[in-house]
Length: 195
Image 1 (cartoon, rainbow, N blue to C red):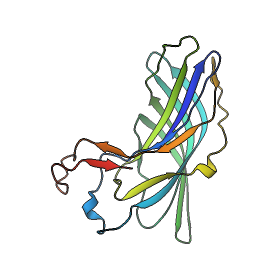
Image 2: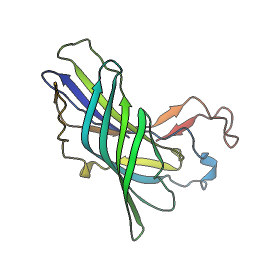
Image 3: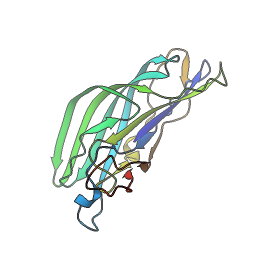
Image 4: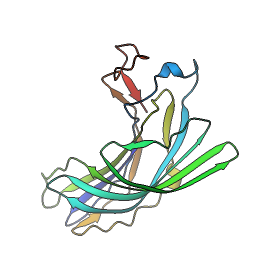
């Protein structure tokens, strides 16, 4: 899941947060699931608190946000990775079980990378993304769904020299890796696919 923030220098900092749900390369093979079973649906959401340390030379920035996951069943989606960054802090878990519904929320901070485009300098627009994928469940086992109903508020981000333009955008995509990661439970020609 990725959250995109588009940024305009000087005139506007468009922080386009998009949630791009991609699942991680280290995953259990789909053969481990029951034949014909559907993947576990995991509602995922992000609430951006701050973006800072924007480094134009290194195309990097720090983002501080809350992330939440809701799901039913025994599958555990709490091990996620930041695909375009490094996780610095994952703290204050709020875990709840209400009937058969599981919920967890974390406060997360990480340093992210994005390819910056300076062709329109000094009024360029940059997109900052947060890309998240599950660390151990492939698309046959887990499917993210963006929790749009609970991510409608635009973040109140102040980044010196930039202005927020537009509202965040969120999307879930299917990602195919051109490998089976040497997993002996996968045929050699089967590519790893993640939601």
